[in-house]
Length: 174
Image (cartoon, rainbow, N blue to C red; front, side, top):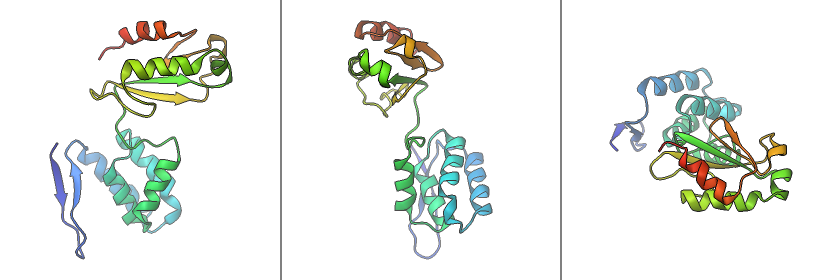
């Protein structure tokens, strides 16, 4: 991965921007932040805007948000890691959401989740090394009658067992 270095004023180290980030999206973020410069109460909306642009909150966005809103980067990072809506790494091409809500829990969601973890080799909140699949643990999918359930992208799979997890995994293009 190559990076673009942007020199900054006042002896502040250069900002490293991965070349994988779209310059037009970075410019959009800069415009948004310019509209809200110095407004410390805009951290969450700024993080939401960054995530809407990039599908995650890249480190450079945390730096830019902190500088523009005049909020310490540690606070911006703290907000981004506190709320489950924000992700700090790119998501995979496919997302698996495993329900661990009450109905699914009672019917063996932890066993099903462990089967996904073992099959993918990642923990909830992580993406497989090939970038194909992100595994997520969710409180409810609204499919209680199919418990234990998981969603692969937009398709719900119910009455899962570890054996069915392996079958479903075979249907996902990697």
